[in-house]
Length: 111
Length: 111
Image (cartoon, rainbow over all chains, first blue to last red; front, side, top):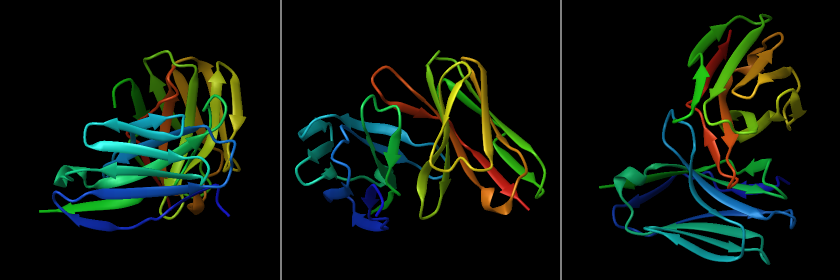
């Protein structure tokens, strides 16, 4: 079993939809939870970061962590074509000096 | 990607030849990383460094070596390239808030 599981998609939604992206993890020692967005042929860029259970909101993006279920989510409200990218979850322990990444979910937002 | 430069951006090499990829950062971050990204596997850690001359292995380190003689430079060497090392290689740094910043990647093809 991988330490971090993520549905690879692709996920296709119409513009304006609410998108839910999810990861599960197996190691209860994980403390840092991040979401990265990666456009085609580019490096990943940090979207959201949290180290506690609960919700964290930033504009149209909400990151949710449920440590009891070992489940993290990223919600995108009012999705836009510019949100079309691959979204990777990343989880770390201790000082987060070594992150474990999910395989990424490819999202396509259509007009 | 501000602060991180990877070179070369693209390289084609023959099986059995040595290859060195370079990562240069301008932000004076202590931690630097080399990842490879492959379809179905996501980002996998090859090696990382936590200071000048301080390096450690990641999950897929076989066939790779690294060196860090200066804070700003982190080199990844494939001692004898194989076709299984065809991949996209990303360098990353970690900032004081545990966020990772990635370079634009090096697309390596071993023929």
